Image (cartoon, rainbow, N blue to C red; front, top):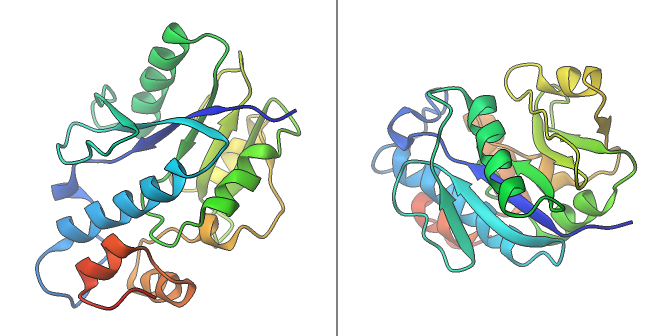
Length: 204
């Protein structure tokens, strides 16, 4: 059975984001990190499986139509921030399905996200990143604790916690960007308009 999701998109303080991504583009990393998030959010907003996108951040600039900003109450811990955000959602709407998605998905296609959210094969499920070690999406059915374990090796930790891995290809949802090689792969898939503009290149 498919559900309509409240989708949490955590965005860490941009000044601290993506220290491993040392790219040769004009300006610093912040505009690019913002662009990644805005492209991921734009794709998510078009998904029929997404009832609302909630950006979990203390940074301004994500007041996109159709989204709501929630404070980052994690004190530097992503999983704590998502836990608090999921609690806020469930207090407002106890029967809502909740999912958390990484913000660094500049190639995200709406269909890939919709297909991943529609899986619903167990109470909790997740999509691993292209490397197979990280997690780009974690979903929980109504009434089920999200129980996030994002971070290094999160795919294994999510599976150990009882979440089922989604096996479908979902290439654009798996392509998060941490390094220059990741960014090159994302550009091969085709990035969104915000990322294209930040890179100073025409849209793929």
